[in-house]
Picture 1: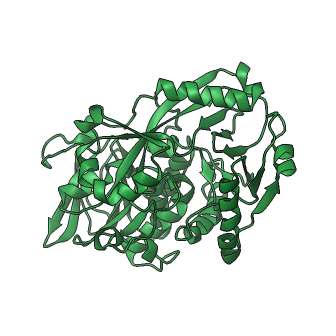
Picture 2 (picture 1 turned 90 degrees about the vertical axis):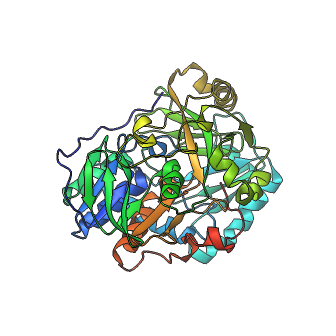
Length: 440
């Protein structure tokens, strides 16, 4: 079941040309289109399904700096600043609130890790404070639980997954961008190793600059053009309750995470728990991902299903004048795991007894696409001039989305990058220079 998303209209006519074509209407693509259009660039945003239809509407909604990999932290800081301004600039509310995020645990090693991260926080001026056991228990009153300790990321917050990407796309349209839903990009026109256009199912848009923000589909699209992008996706399940008694706005414990939505419902999920499905793409990149698999074996299960033959990681081949995999699967909407739903409810009800009487409104499956080091690629691609890749957000994409889109826009147009782009370079995954596996 797909989560409910704010619907937006598409533009009727496909432009003949654009300064930049953005492929993929998730939070990163919508942000890129917004910042490009604000600068006066002509922009076409093409989306095979609906804007925000895949992972951008299926996440927790957290916008955080806390516990970020140091490579990501400058981008996270700038993203928070961008989130602050959207409602005023666009005139529509994406639901962003700096409500603070509360983490608690009874695992001494986990708490020690949070304490160590405070040195990173100090280096970047991020406000965070450790909680004693009594403070953590007081902040989570209503659970009936006591905690060894915790951390409060004071200035972090949340936004609304159902609203954010559509609102940013509408903001892009206010500045002249065109939006084309139900319009799959089949591939690129390439001349002498450089992009000269985007071939869509509705026609070709001439351009010399493309941003590929295709989420779980990005590696397959790249492969069609001989560009290697190591990417793996983990299938996860989340649910949303009906309106519930007010409690914390955003809460994490290793057992469960809860986020209060604008209407008073809660999104419920478990961090790092999911299924890694055996696929041709997964087999191809298994060696690069082995350190991550080993680190997360306790949280990730392995399975095989229809995704071996259909979907973004299957062995897809196509020509630009025929139907492509992107048209056959308009919205990547895996069925939620009933076992996972039962676990989510059991843990949530045990932690917050007031939720026991609250029905489930909706549940959904999704794919979190990741790189081998769990740090995004936001970079011109190796070997293909004019293609900027913005994918592999590794479960961090929603909160980082504004900054990631801004950086992709900067790189596509040669403007001054919002942050140092070197940690996000594509080449690091090909030349052995990637760093340690980051946080999920």
